[in-house]
Image 1: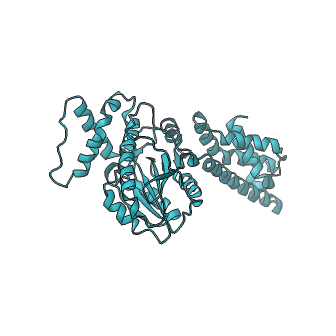
Image 2: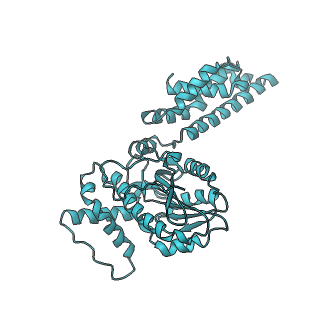
Image 3: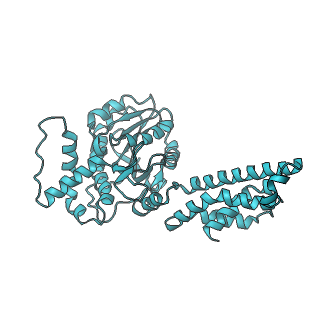
Length: 383
């Protein structure tokens, strides 16, 4: 069954009581749902287009099913009887219900309403999840470890305003957010901020550290830019990362000199971002799309830094655990859901020892083979 057919069939089934069509066989319904759940890649665009047409298509079918007269006579006969009026109301309600069904399908497929954006995210950041789905899966995985409202979220995300949405979504599940991050998502608060955060964890609770760089994907599917609220044209996203990649390219090709230690604090963070990205210069120069490989490289650099902070500062956590979720935040045009590609999900005790790798629990992605991985894989200690 084609995806378009499946969408229309499922919508008709969902509004059967309003239109009184022939019942859909259970097997047909199951086949439709299975095909929809498997939709990805090229099928995403078909799903989006079909879903947008569902309400109109079902409305047309409903008009015929309800037995209303041709359009030319509709105005004249619409008031002839209460029965006709009831039919009109039924059709309207059915079409409205069909729209709800279509929206629900999009939500279950975990795709946005802009095909170009959704397709590109699926292509270059496979495994990325909407914020809603990410928070739901992480909360479910950590519930077994006692996480809940007595927990504390500590984020290391870029200062860019587009990244506050994920923090808000995480706070709804895990309580208040403590910010450790700065430009490009590096944890510039360091061990001092981690220690301060640890002293704010509710008694008997644990903390969840979420870190990673971010990248935009605009409405045309272009990576490294995004349309922001109130602005017609897209802009660099992440601006700090893009600037750092330009510096790294200049150093690699001999057109620029390496930064020295910053002499003042007024732009020290950007100096550091560029310096941390230098080990990835050769790979980025060879990348088919530098804006795609850039956030992967930044994640790798940040992972090493976060690991050092957690293992060094874990003793500040009284009696709880430290869960660390790392990945790439994907920003989309204003009004669309953002995404997050999880690349690591680990649990540490307050001795700084890795006790559980929970990557499989939320289907973490992997770094591309070409990205120089600077972080050594650790094995959990036995409890």
